[in-house]
Length: 185
Image (cartoon, rainbow, N blue to C red; front, side, top):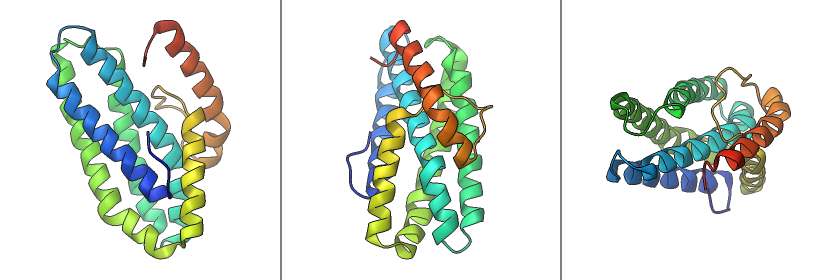
């Protein structure tokens, strides 16, 4: 996900890719492997994106943006709700009737989160930080996504330090499981 640039450009590109995945999931029939494959891809992208934001974006918001603690706390709460929904979706068959209800909740949560980030948080961060800081954050986010987990872990600690320590190990285990099961290909 993402395409380079500063942190805001990187995360906005991620948002567009996730939105496209939502549209693709809605367009495929419930029967067959394509919906499950797309749901797995959506989960992978959302988890990697969330971990990178938690490790680098939200600490920067706390440091640079006036009132940043409250903004970061709100975004982290959004992430927890999304991660729980992803965990619930993870074990469901693509044709399970309950899946569409959870999918709609997930899409609603993610789109609201994206609107808030892009319409509020990103604007404040750009105003508070110089381009050098935003570029460095963009690189840190890209690097974090490379080793981030690919599955939801709602019970794992969410502090930036704990995430930086635990995420590479969880990511390694998740990618091994993905390889063995053929998930995300």
